[in-house]
Length: 388
Image 1: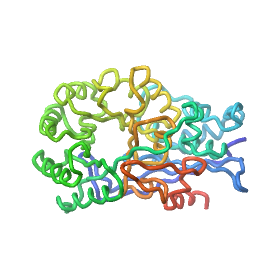
Image 2: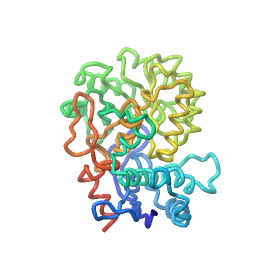
Image 3: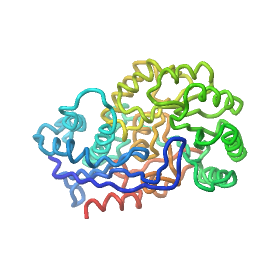
Image 4: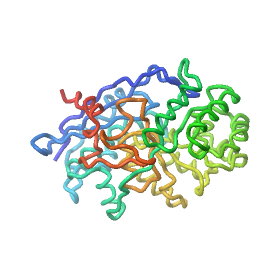
């Protein structure tokens, strides 16, 4: 049993949308295919992966460091003999050989993308959906049969007025989502409050709305906005300051007692642990948004979940960023609190399996072996192009 080849390419997910910090006019992502010598239904098993939006393609790092390490390793060291399968943890260790501790930046995205493809292959070799494999290995066989999801959108867009924003949110509600999310911090406070009130008129109450600052605010602005948001009783106030400014997050919690969320730009167990130790996050109300595709993959994510439980956090307070099928599988198999969803942006990488509708805020799971990419035709076409 061995990996025979790994292919990667960079694809565009550019669009004219923007949040408070960046625009997406030149956004890219990496797509990878891990080809194995295992055969199922007459074809070699191939695991696919990609990185989440907000970080660019990682082809150079893969080609220069990570792919050579993996392909030069002794194949026998990459086998899980107990399960007669590839060993994602041995593969992860090989990828990270000769990498210094710390510096959890772009390399975490490169490794996370490859790790996704490895787990897709592992589940396909075992003939199970990934969520079922994870539940069997780590949750005594118990998996969630559906996952809570919210619709992320509300980006700033040239010419987008309040009516267009309301129409967008109404379309999410019409498609079965109960909770929606919008961007703030890219306009004045007065204008953002008008936008928030316009959306609440569509979703009924503040508890059906999350707002996301994308790390834009300093502490005075964070507190000013927080005080203005308190009367709306929002579902959460997200990533208000720089993701590594734990002191800002801790201080903000003294002024804003409603739920907050952060973590999508923390790329290791160690950074996540620092947030829990020093960020003042409250396990009874706050939410954690670590994204496996950006943070060294599922091998590291399991270490992060273990750390959270050691610090008294339930995995149900974790709702990953990214809106992709990998996080959906993790949410169902490892008992997370839910998953982000991008119904209209970052296509074809956002969204879930074709034919599985969102019902009253929940989405079901595909039964395909692996992550389930083959059940999403537009995405699978982009991935399969690596094999042409």
